Image (cartoon, rainbow, N blue to C red; front, side, top):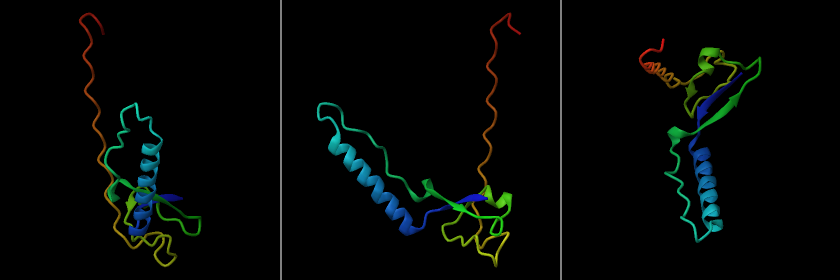
Length: 108
C-alpha cells in the first residue's frame, strides 16, 4: 500500500534547492539569442508530496491511503495501525461533468 504525505521542512528545502539548481542550469545553458526560459513561480509546500510505502504488516486503510497526510504523519507506526496520528487533508471535490455540447440542428 502506498499513500502520500506533505514534505517535511527539511525535505521541502532540499526540493526547493534542487529546483533552483535546475533553473539556474537551464538559464546558464539557454541560447542568448532566444527568449529566456519562463519557469513560473517556485513550488510551495502545498504543491509537493512524497510517497510513503507500507507493506502488508504496516498497511493503513485504503480510505486513509487515498488522502494526502500531514508532513508530521508517523504512519506506518505499528502502534497506530491501521490508522495514523494525523488528520489527513480532505479529499478533493469531484469536478462536475461538463455540460454537453448542443448538437447542430438536424443532428440527434
